[in-house]
Image 1 (cartoon, helix red, strand yellow):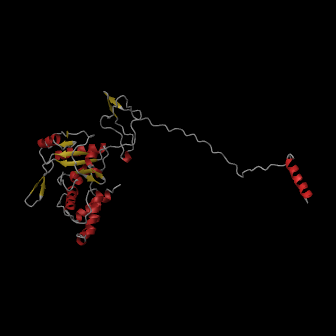
Image 2 (cartoon, helix red, strand yellow):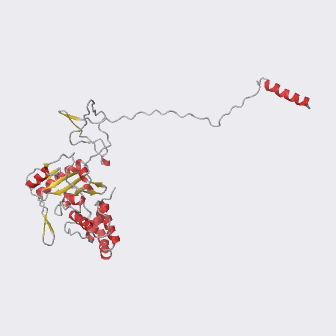
Length: 341
């Protein structure tokens, strides 16, 4: 037995040590040959040459927009370029301007002064209130500029519209000389009219501002719109519809849309006027449009003043601050026409 095992082991050893010249090696070959990906060489995009900066007696200007106006972006400067001057370093404009920018000026806010011309000038230039422009009532062709458009004027105060607050930061303010209103024994306000010359001046000025800064219609507002619980200007005598119809400035509702809503609005007021849920619905509609109103579900003083401010702007025939079917229909028509984006 031992002899047999010895012979088998010796045979295996001899076989393993013998050169394997005739043994065919097995090499793995994939069924589908692997193709190496080609290296893609990207050609760098050629940047469009930017318009040159204008230099006038050492002052630099850039008056061309290279940004996307459909996104309300604009790179043009309507004044000299303001640049830092760090000590020991040179600020260069090799890559000026970046396309991702737009104007600080998002709103145009209209006011009345409630003062005659001379006192309006004194208050707006010498005291702690100001505006970018003052439209006088002297019958000439002059409009007074009081503050650089690139700086904040102190005209809006505590204010809000839609998602923005403290609108001094992002608005241009225009004051119009007008005596405001008087109040009779019953507390009813009677507002002073605006002269035709003033309205033409305001329209020309507003048109220039909204075009240059691409200010949307929803952002051309009354002081009473952005501060309804404390301000009334420019009041119900200011011709908002005329600005809309003749100069395409600001907002106005479509009459057909208002009429289509009016019948249902009348039914609402006949059956739901004092329901908290209905008042809440109306307050929500005011808030959606832009007014900074609390959702109290009650006809409280702040709601009454908000209704009054809305009527000054969009229903000046009746500005008693009482919500009625026509005011409700106008508000809904405006929300349809100018939805929040």
